Image (cartoon, rainbow, N blue to C red; front, side):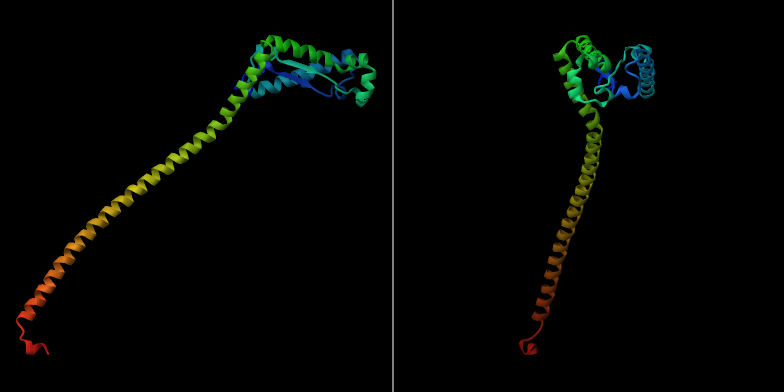
Amino acid sequence: MFRTLNLLSRTIFVISRFDEEADIEDEEDYNKRFKIKKENIQNRLNDLISLSEEEKESLTIVAVAANPFDLGVEHWLKHQEEFQKLSHIKALQDTTQKKIKENGGKLTIIEEAKKSVIQDVVYRQMPPAKQALQDINREMEYLNKTLEKRRKDIQDLNKEISQARIHLGDFIIRYFSDLIRQISGTKPRNLQ
């Protein structure tokens, strides 16, 4: 979908709860573990969609701890400076702003997102729609053949009915002609 919908250049991959992965108070540990996670994401994406080296290097990946050490929103509202340092939310905000500028601003991103949604719908719905159309066409072909066969059967039946009428008419004429001849040759006293 990243390729089909052209999402790669507009996507920020966010590693959340990074305080569970690294010692976020130790910048060296944070950077070391972030590098490992980033490489894992790059490799998984490469396995899925075969990234070029340029695409691999241009992936935007950030690691954050939205609630470091699970101390809660109230605690961090009182200690915002420490929160900014530990959470790395500022890195996500900066990366987001940079990504918006790189992609032509908010309106452009919104328009591209609309296109992506439409492409996604078309991409996912087109195969079943094509299959349904093929099924309908097959069924219509079958029904047309059946209709044509029924029409031919009706024509054949109409011919048989016409022939039967002619034969019946001929039979009735012969029968009554014979009957009339027989009666004509009979005297009235023989009829009693």
